[in-house]
Length: 163
Image (tube, rainbow, N blue to C red):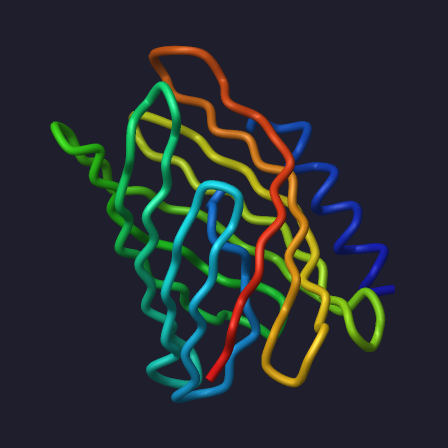
């Protein structure tokens, strides 16, 4: 049932409007995750049972580099609220969003996230595959839709180290 809800939610998000470059990671309180993706570096730390603080740097190609400071609020085991600030160098935007995640198999977790600001919308859907005790492989589809300019869509592959 949870897999069906996750798949339907991801499909709905994809059809709404084009994420959040960092994947949704399952961390325990006090745990840190550091990761790289195709064009992203991120660092997250779960400060409390319900709050994770993160930083990410994304190379957006023609849109340049952006830096995010964000927080994820764990509302349920599967649902997170996201708030952040994206700095584009000459401009910055506060954004809000939601993330949804759930198990796909004993060693894989699927997720979808959607964030939006007054300057952009972003969607990501993917899966984290546990390949070692503290290492995940991430495969994702992401879509960045700026209000001014062309959409940027693609598939990404990355890795996360948790400690």
